[in-house]
Amino acid sequence: MLPLATLVHNNAKNGTMGFAPNDLLIRREPPATPEQAEGADNPLVEQRVTQLRQRRILATQALNNAAKKAALLEARWKVNQKVWLEAKNLALPYETIKLAPRWYGPFKITKVLSPIMY
Image 1: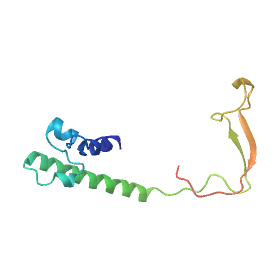
Image 2: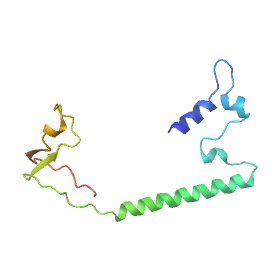
Image 3: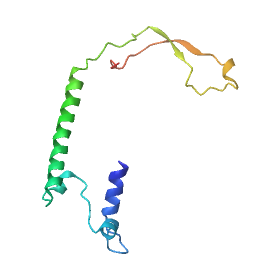
Image 4: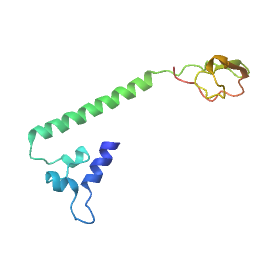
């Protein structure tokens, strides 16, 4: 999102000068979206924008097809099952890792929220 924010900022008119930074530096305001680039007098640019739109549509279709094919698996854990939790990424008050427990538990599962994709 940073490039888009930079583009919007550089296309906005400055209150003091009355000009946008892009207008002063490159003497034009680059378009933020492909729709703004329509009507350009450069056929190569028009061809590239059309190609990018087609690729975006194909990518969206591929992502949607992959999401449809991915089946939700059953949850690995069930209610009332007991599990141990690994302490690897826990911030614990031990002065040395060697003396800290490696696992915590067993904890009883009381609620499974939803199946997870693995």
